[in-house]
Image (cartoon, rainbow, N blue to C red; front, side):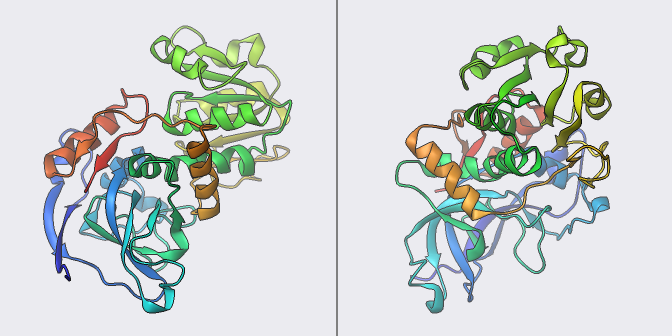
Length: 338
């Protein structure tokens, strides 16, 4: 049976500040159609990220990001292939469980490809963005992993180039990207220091052996003897003054990467002799999604989910993005679609 229409959580205007979620509405819209290279995925679960409310607020338009309206919320998704062009059906058959992130290369839009769209019953997804969901993880876990997992992997490996024996300071160990970055750096054999509140200390400590926790409420990391001469500072929080302070603790050629602050600029080579010093936004890479999902499936990586799941409804979406903006949770917020 062909389904013509679906429900989607959308907004028709940008809004920030108090009441920013008021612009979210449940709309009835046509189900998109498959085309060569483009599958229709029946969404089972979607996850939120800080970028969702930043885009909703219109804060990235000045950085050259497209802002098509109406906009269907959400980037992270997991589900099953509902429709695919016959030329792609042998590799991506109907019913195959898949996940991914509706994102481009360094920003959310990429040419004429779909942008966002995860908070909906169905989404048109380029096959180039899809990964096969391992049988060993749930749709909720898969949806929670794509954006933050890819980001953490790329900043640890590609930007900071973390290797065995490195001294690495990660600002925001309890954040979704931070907790994965901590685990990946520990697995690389780095000596990891990370900031966290007393409330999250035990959780962060559980992410790996030899992690040094800095209570950011009681200590200034840039004033500690233990954090001098670090190889890399990774900022996952957009901490005020992070780049300024990082320059006092980094080795001469040390790396600084932020996923949440423009202060350092966008040119990785713009602060020579530092090897990398820039803000970074993920580049869509299903191969990395596969690595992260496999680690979740075999238990060598953990990304906790906040329970209970949020319902697929207008109020559920408002509550979810409000909670995301508040940032008082530890773990990923997930919406169960079907």
